[in-house]
Image (tube, rainbow, N blue to C red; front, side, top):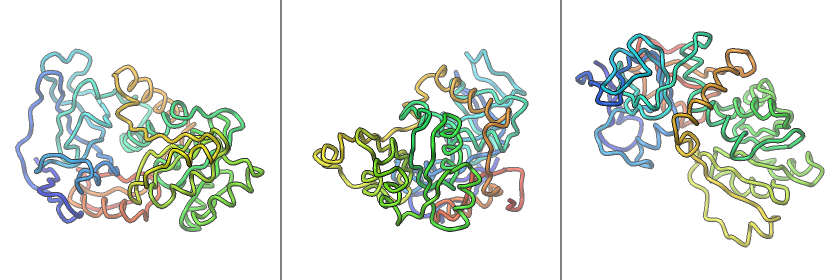
Length: 328
């Protein structure tokens, strides 16, 4: 079978499509034929060594496909069943992947493969950020950085579902229109934060900042918060933010800072299923609009990761093993 191998850490040029033996599922695992693999910053962190893995390894952590074989001890999944995973399936940039059965969730008939993949890692992230990390209340104003990105568009919609008001940030006018279509009430350029945020909230500041950018936006995010507001740093696309002086939190108004990860918000199968079931239901009922930023063949995994790193895309990027050419 084909797989995208990372033979050493480094730039996207270390990604190599190669032929490897098809794996077999062990106890508590399933072998899945991959229909679609998601492209995530987690894949880039692994490739560059920011999230270390022993090399060589097969890239990719997320996808949707069909179970072809179940290992011993697997009772709730069977061959022919369509499943998705956002972790527990390292090596998803491949024709086949072994997935921990506890981390494989059924995909309902009303949700297509591409859409399901687009709302696994990113949709579940948006769901837990707005419902748990900071539980958005009706009337809350929040700041969503990179509002035209994959998580940003979904998070904007989830905040709006909960009755919140979204101030989004973008880097271009083209992305501003994407953010508005996702439901952002106000759209700013990054250099307008925090001054315009204060203006738009009557000088008070926002209840929460959802920041997947990191270093480049961190100080402006802190300065945008209302007293007792929370800065949620869920990603570091521009690099890790600087250390925080505890006294800065006090002088800013008894502020909070947190760095959540999807692992801790899907710690059990029950919690994972509750989140994916809700997100899939939103998609099936038309309450959550999915945005696909590009579809790439497995052979162009390098191009997909380079596009994500350059922050030139809007929406979710997908790898499709069955495709031979990139498409929108």
